[in-house]
Length: 109
Image (cartoon, rainbow, N blue to C red; front, side, top):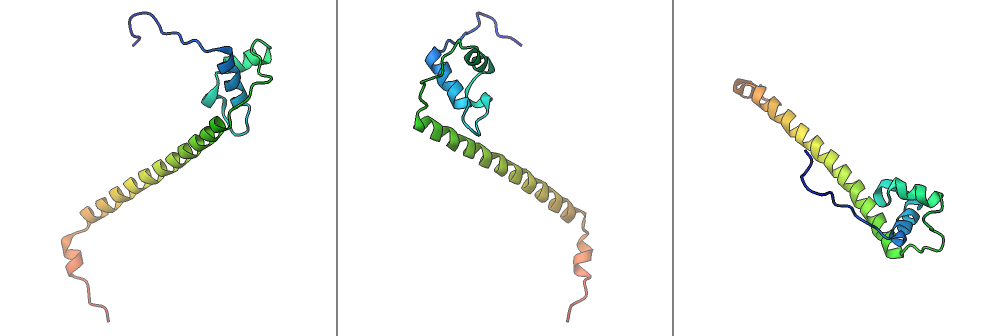
């Protein structure tokens, strides 16, 4: 449900947009991470000038670290879900086993 009242419109400088477009052109960076598709279209049409815009090395390194953390988080989430299923499976097996079956075992030699 939409909130009542006026919509908030964010305005970004052309320099910010150009930097975001430059970041989105780096290898391994998805457009959605840094720039709106509309900004890339405007850059292609020449309405946003990206030539001469320098991308800060710290920003690039931070973006790379963020991608690494996101990748590790996805892996840990999959592992966590797998462990939850394994615990549920073993708990169900223990509940189904009868208490007599453990006492009637023959001794091994």
